[in-house]
Length: 211
Ligand SMILES: [Zn+2]
View 1 (cartoon, rainbow, N blue to C red):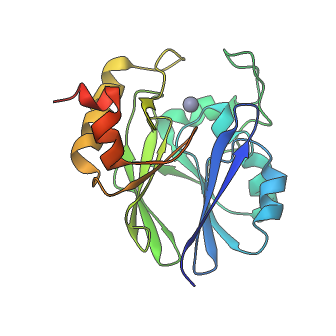
View 2 (cartoon, protein in one colour):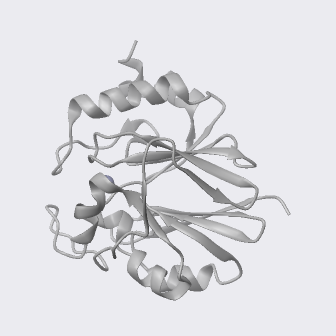
């Protein structure tokens, strides 16, 4: 069976939650809400891990319920753990999400590798939208897939005006992505449609500012 990607839009901001399924196991990226419904939708596969690209409520609000139902380990960068633990409180945007994230079972850091079936994902630290933002770069059967969280969107990039955001850091992170991500890669962002690195290199105004 070839690997499969499922995409769900969850919560008030219609955050993209992804499930990457390989060899009967799946990696869930950014369950921002509806954790119990996600567990039901993925009941035909084992859940290897729940990974959040950063700690904002619209990306972690469903972790607690999903973890309770699947027993899967929850992983996030240590620099965003604190934000995630308060995800259920009303945010600066006036939105309350499903739940506070639970205690992580492990931390993501530069070079961490998450295995799922015949695929794996390498963690690239991309701070700026939040201190602990990461991108997940596919290897093995997931070669060419990159989860970009709220760092890089089709035609845009994450905002830096929320607590912990940093303009210089996100530009440094985008510089890294511009240099390190293969143009043929498919980009799967935390909001909005997918893209390819080649298309973003040509058209994204934030990437074209980087020489
Ligand atoms: Zn965010």
